[in-house]
Length: 84
Image 1 (cartoon, rainbow, N blue to C red):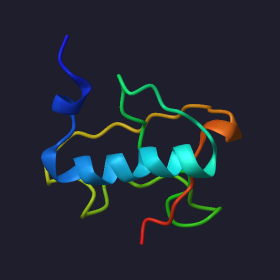
Image 2 (image 1 turned 180 degrees about the vertical axis):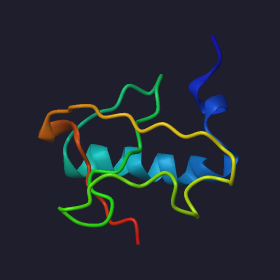
Image 3 (image 1 turned 180 degrees about the horizontal axis):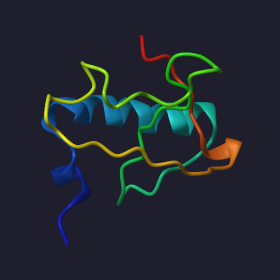
Image 4 (image 1 turned 90 degrees about the vertical axis):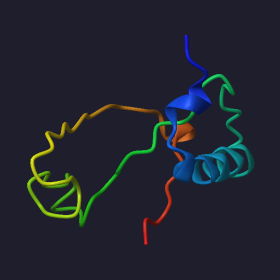
């Protein structure tokens, strides 16, 4: 099995490490260091438009197939942040 850190693009590793530290300090969640957290949208544009439109430019390269996955997590395991 590959090391989880090899599955994260190099440009995002620093951001993932920041998320892990924030989870530890803000919600007291000690993530399993064998895995990286799931980085996902809670709300895309507004309460009325929670899911991104994968056909919109800027999300995926033209011609690339995309998939939206929905999942449920307890609030105690979620760190919300502002994308902007």
